Image (tube, rainbow, N blue to C red; front, top):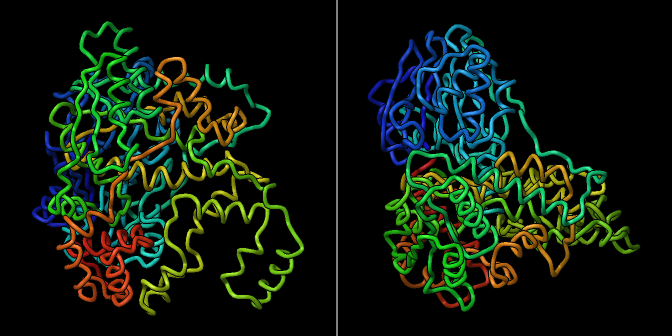
Length: 624
């Protein structure tokens, strides 16, 4: 795992070095810079595969191509053999970076990218053709940001942009709008108006001479064909094989590997497959498992006992880490180390877990993606036919079309697909309301933010997948946005702050290529049986107590912390709201914060998002 920065344009070496070193924790083991005319490529390396031979930036033997890359290619050995059979000569022993570079040179990105099984983001420059190619993996496990301001800049995070002199720091009001709605910033938006996030599964091509930029997908989530529906037993068999293959591929490393074990289905299955893979390859060491314990969790929300049960069953080397020291200093550091505002509170305990886990291992396996691929959320149970048209909503719709009813009544005119989409956005990851945004933004900000388009990216995605829209369409929309921009972002930032590489086998090609072509929801999904495929799989390998119980995530008592341990700093940020964020309505923020401190909990999630925003802006000032 690594971090990179590329600048094509004017930049002083001293300024470039300062910018590159903002991502040092992503790559503490090695540092490299290559300059060629007006091109500067920089890289920070966390050595995981081929410790001695994977130095970057890496140039092709003829010097034509130069590459910087963040991630891991799990099928690099197979690709290396295929390239070697076609006459490609390798200089390193087993570097996936060299396979990526020579594969791009030999086949070109259009042929290579669909072949890759991995998590990756890279920039490669063709000196002869004066063209830059870049790409981001299928699900956006690894981040990629770029700007065409005065040339071309790309980086693993937004942090380097703050160290480049004269780079504009204007706030993106559309991103601010989405942040208040969903509490993260969805790609391609970023908090900076002149920087964009490359969408997952996309290939970018930039022409140096003309400054022409083209972006196109190299992979998209397949439409599930009803003709390919399988029985539950058939899908369980396919998934069993695919998960095992994906886990085996992702265990390749020249450094210690561990696994997050929450005690839930997804992570417990990861431990099972790791244990099986160790036995098959005759590895003598035990699987290393790590669990976070929560002394402040509500009754029933600390899953440590279930994790211990799985660890004992599979005879792992198990470590429990106590999250009790969620101090104010840790909170401030966590928020201000982010490269843009992010308010998923589960980021905090995950970051705490990573801070301890990196003392034992360099690579961690996680179960991310299980809920989105295998129907893990109750909201997936809703369908279009649950909302048939009625005389009342037809009447309201006709009046709404004539602007004769207030906006608050318009949702009552929705039925069928429109009502399902509206319900899903409200039930899912979307926490803020239109009313909240009007109250938290100043009048000028409201004009810039185009509030009518809030969450439009999600609605368009969901509506494009199927007609009539169904559960699998909703799941695929979440894979595009919720998983990539919230869950995977959370995992990447929490882990890379401590130089810990996290891999997610649920999103490996063996799983997604086999499972997503089928309608998972057609295989036994019901109110009493979410994730039917994984539950039946777990029934084969795990204790019933692990999988036959309510789902819980990292539960953090935000209200308690904001009124106790974090009160001093959060009150300070709120008091200085006009100075920190003049585009926010400080009067409303202070009113809501006072209600929180008096014991009212009704808007604590929204207040946490605003306080997180203020804390981040206090260190990263932007221009309105």
